[in-house]
Picture 1: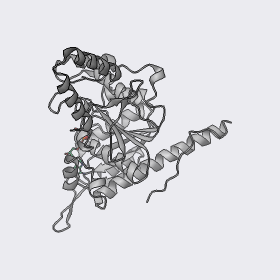
Picture 2: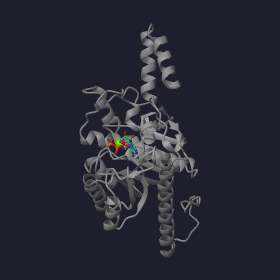
Picture 3: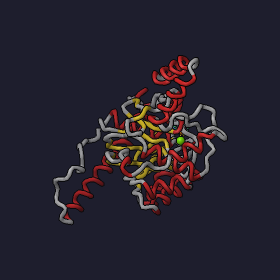
Picture 4: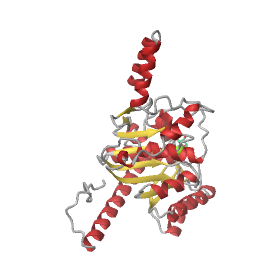
Length: 346
Ligand SMILES: Nc1ncnc2c1ncn2[C@@H]1O[C@H](COP(=O)(O)OP(=O)(O)OP(=O)(O)O)[C@@H](O)[C@H]1O
Ligand SMILES: [Mg+2]
């Protein structure tokens, strides 16, 4: 339990005997933290409250993304292929290995998993102008619906509600200055994915797939969807690409071999990295310590570091191209938003 939660519990216990003082406090809290009391459980009135309060903040308050240089979606058409694990490890790798300022959004409104993967819990605090202060761990700031829900409460909002909630998470958060905001996408190519691709200024998308045919089919669909909404594809991640037996070292391509590379070639994309099927990845994820922190010397961690490095190189290239285009169009230099810190990948 976080310190702020404990503090809230202690306060509410103290106020239990004093109804009016408690009401006053609740009103105050509601004003300062419009999301206080949001809960996504079945039929909870606060679900409707979230949807109205979650409508995108007024333009003047769209400070949340103003200082964000790049937004990158980690996606796949298919569920359970390792998107959230890639998102968490890549975000932490960008922050800890490359020293970048990084944020992480859990766009999986119905099945948030980042609070577990990042060991974060408790409702966020508020800035004076009503933005959420994202909690931070492993040098990464994170926001997720999971911070507002009880562990076992189902979130059963329909498409538009979920879209509004995602708006609120992205735009209603005080990210400060970020080099990269990583978005962990839900599975599929539905409302949330299309709306996000159309409305948010994404620098690119990374498609995660396992090498088996059914996953590759959905990975292709996911990639095509981003192309349709004109979001650049940064490349593919070949997850669970092989398993090395810890006893004898035998390498077994459990989900097949070469499938992700084939799709990459077909679509003119790059394979950013191959992550082995590794029980340590699963174990450390369940314990809330990404493998890049728990076992940074492991082969799996090396794969995530490589992916993070390639993603950052590609974002820098995009920055440089944009700067060249501006210069060619007579815009000259001198403007702040240049290519930023140049970091070489080891
Ligand atoms: N390389 C890997 N080796 C071993 N286990 C892995 C690996 N990558 C992911 N996993 C495990 O596979 C499961 C699914 O991973 P994850 O939750 O990241 O997938 P997802 O694509 O985000 O799923 P969903 O579509 O439900 O959001 C988790 O238990 C995770 O720990
Ligand atoms: Mg996920």
